[in-house]
Image 1 (cartoon, rainbow, N blue to C red):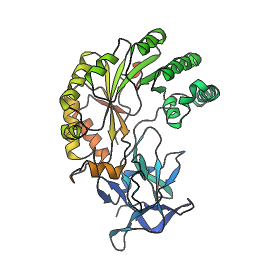
Image 2: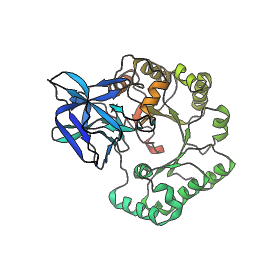
Image 3: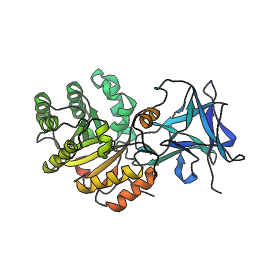
Image 4: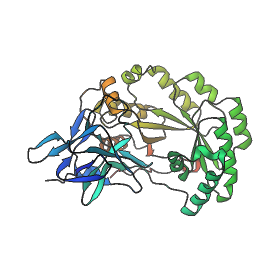
Length: 367
């Protein structure tokens, strides 16, 4: 019989325990399932355990051979570091009607082999900047107010991998100043622009861009007019935020599949490096229907790189509002294996790539 991680729960004071008898139950889509030991990896370093208030965890009672509610504590989850992808969701029963209770970026936690474990896969671990240089960089951004936007933890995670995410003109200006300040470290950086470019932005880029900078334009809204106006000769790569390639699902979100495909067709003609930020949700992304549509799309269009990320949404609301059909679920890990087997050209990873990394092999090795 295979090993099942024990239930991990928290008391009202936030103290975390592992249950000596009851086993973990996690969730995929609308199913509560008993996880298999090979789905688990040790809890990554520097993760903070998070108790989910006003909720009752589900657990597996081996004596009764059934899933039960455990009323002796609260569910425990964790936010994984950048570079990891969770494969299952927390399984719980809410004691409140507050729909903001859970955000699906959380990953459930179990206890197995005398350590905490999580259902996840390591997609990519780069950490290009070494500890010595990291301290220099963090010292700079902590002592100058213009770099305050870089101080958030998620930004520091990307910064360690030489990517800066920019949301407006002010941040872009500070970004160029920051790169000039640390230029003696001789590091190549990706600057990801998460807003529509205008003449002011393009002029700023024209003045400051150099060979160490890779400019990545991130597309979140599918408008051909905005896309065309944002392009310039200084853009090196394009990334699209996509949570589904399914025409039916896109239509529910008010996205025309025709415009969606035309954006990719137009992007191909620009001779740019094209990546997709595939925003994943266990029990949705890895269903048979979604897998088939994903494979069909990436086999049709020139997509160089798939960045695997998490769809940050309330899991209860998502599955209820989208009326996701109960269907066969491959599991994210199996789905990625199938994609790689069927389409060997496309590469997978987690972090954005600099120009000198565009044609490197896969970051993600599927075991």
